[in-house]
Length: 374
Image (tube, rainbow, N blue to C red; front, side):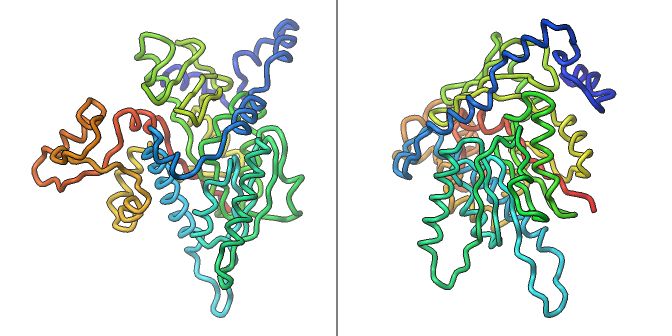
């Protein structure tokens, strides 16, 4: 993929996908009949039922979801530290941090922002039911807060952020310190216009020095795995990725279907990161960080506070090959990597791990940080 996509990236300024380059009437007619995949995405998440902690703890991907939440918590915490890095003038109160959450879902990150002590958040998502649940979660958080605790203010917007400009629903002059887009950017790469609108929403209202942060599947990893497969799909017992074809991966509109346990079952699109970086530059953004989840984990877990948070959030499963109380699954290939690690000299037991299937799913993702240049 690298050489093919690098070739396509040449002259990427004003790049068109293969289908956009074909200008005959038949192609233009067929494009009008293409289903808007955003409708499918919104429908899926609107139907998704909110379940309690007891039900989530029985899920096959319980620890993977906790791991992903830990990773986002670390990312958000460190970016908030950078935003607040500049010391205010003597006697001046620091300005409250303003956040835009694109693809907020049901509000799973609200508690992270609350712990970060932000001042205001705008939550936007294509799924109206999810936005309602996000607002309900916020209202519940505000009701249960201690009377001395100041909770951030919030605005909730139902919108397809790849087709609608949020600036039309925001206050004039409103600016953000951080835009966060977690596990959602890939939906916008259905075509160039949608991807550009999504980036404009993410970046145009950022303050100079502000950050655009997020998580998204690594296109190179997805293509590497499907190319290594004997079919047009790959995965395991908890997730499946299925491409429509192999061998050709256009810059925009390269669709695959992603399913994960009972949580996700929707079409997605490859986000070729060099292209994303190029498009972000048009919005005066520079790349600060791009790391695979594995790299991010290995770097951050070295810090005591992050390791402590990981244990608090149950982000890894406890494993010890000497513990007879371990689930029977621990004797299978799902935990052979943990068993091997336990056998190394100097390793303290138990060790924290994800099952093989969970790690195969989590390791398709990367984390990114862009910063707006002044």
